[in-house]
Structure formats: structure tokens, C-alpha cells
Length: 241
Image (cartoon, rainbow, N blue to C red; front, side, top):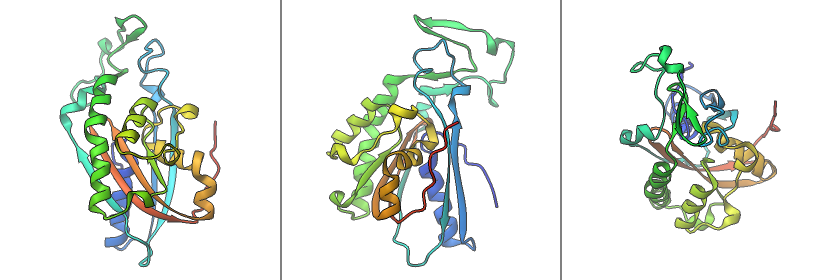
């Protein structure tokens, strides 16, 4: 069985929820979760509000059912009222591509784009993340009865450093428990969580058990969290092309 889930920044968390349910409740014993985006296709190089921020990445996560595996905990959320904060206006079912889709407009100094380019309202994203993401992290910690101090790392979607640091401080998490890859790869959308795990935690993931809290948030709005336990994972090297 194979199918797509159309999500961006929260896609890895949503995908883990779906594939873990299929493995634990169905006849499937192994699964492969592929997450990735080529975000640079949709940004305009003349738009300083988006072009410097994004990178392209893909990830592959192999999972296998084990009746003795520790529980995985999830909470997932959606608020469609924020859809305009991260959007490509033309190219979907509502606004088909036309000649007008390729006409560039200067929005402000250093911001030129056309309707098939990504629009990003940074302040609205910041307000959303501040309001919803930190509280959802606290919620899953409480509902899963996991001691926050027992979580080895909080691996968040690499939105931007200011947003993530604000969430970290609001959740009262130590700096050394929140790894970053954005300085190297930019915002890599749905692949940013597994990419950060490999970039910063590869040796530890391979050599010892870790309890992780994974958090994805953004386009949609959609957001979600997962608490899981790893145990001597097999990790590939990051391939840069």
C-alpha cells in the first residue's frame, strides 16, 4: 500500500502517527515514511522575505512493528483560519495557473514575486507558534505522563531561530536539549525534524536509547507533537547534492 499525505512543516509528525497506527492495528509489519519538500521551487529569488530562508531536503524512515516496543504518544492539531499566512496563491484547484500567474509585482523594497511564488507572513507565523505550539508541547507531556526532565531532546521543526527559541524558553527547556540544523540547511519543511536528528544526534541515536519529543508546525496551520523512545537506531549519513 502506498499513498501521499499533503502536508508541509508538520508532515513528519502526521506521517509517523499514520504509519505507526497502520503497523500496530493492521496487518502491516514494516513501513517506509518518506518526507520531503523542494521548497525552493516556489520562492522568488527577488523576494528577501522567503528566498534566504528555505532549503530542499528529503528523508526516509523505516519502521518495523514490535509488540514489545514502548508506546508512542501523539497530539495533532489544525486551524484552517491561518491558511493565508503561508501560501502559494495560484496553481491549485481554486486558482488555476494562468498568464497572470507569472506577472511579477513589487510588494515592498526587496520583495518581488508573482502568484505562483510562496507568500510568508512571518509575524503571523510567529504569533501562531507562540500561542499554539508551546501549549501543545506542554499538553502532550502532561497527557502522556512523561516527566519532562526525562526527555533527552526536543527536536523541533526548523522554522526560524527566533520562533524556536521563544518556544524553548516558554516551555522552560534547556538550550542543550534543543538541536538545530537551520544554520546549515535552512527551513527544510517536512524533512527538517529527521534531518536535524541526523545532523546533530546521529552518534547518540546509534549508540544508546533516547527519549525524544518531536514537534512540527506551520503551513495550514497544522501542528503536532510526538514522544517516542529510540533504541540504537541504524542511521545513514546525510547525502548532500
